[in-house]
Image (tube, rainbow over all chains, first blue to last red; front, side, top):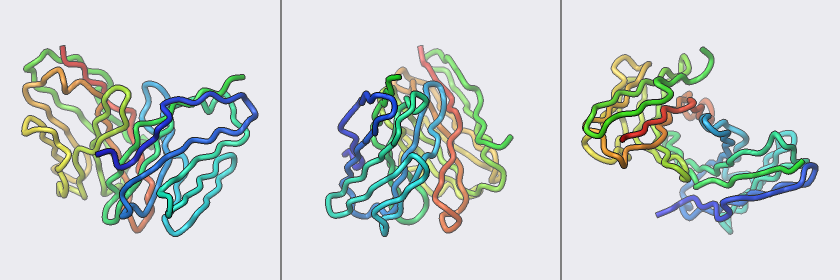
Length: 112
Length: 115
């Protein structure tokens, strides 16, 4: 039962354009959402997060949008840079301690 | 160091061999997690410690998997009688208590290959 879904395994974007990575979840008990970035042979690195009481959080070039009614969140990267090329994991936390449920990841390639 | 440290980074084990994977969390982090990441998949939760107490081990796939954190700092994940399906990256993560923030910091992982 995949509670956090990233339906696009890969995405290619031209440098300078916007990258939009999507994520859907099924468990309405999730109350905190995170995006992690992962380079090959490295562990996931925290990127940005959002609480379920908000619908938008922005940090520099990265913005996360949350649509609770649709159980959907997205990560916008603008402008995209070649160094953004990595696998991006959507993740969610449900109450209690920080047990994180991850999606399967989307591989982003930013083309120079 | 400043981050979560894991060792060994790479391990090749013969089927049936026991392995031990070590995690040094960020100093002061009371929460420690182990995750398993198979190729092409997202990390899957294995177990959670709050200080030395193992509060959740629901993700451990079999009784061949055992984790400990005896002094509330360093943790060891032990896999007995390894099988080929155990081949994966084992990620350790640590964090402060949830009321101090929700960011979970991951180590670089221990890459286990069972041959």
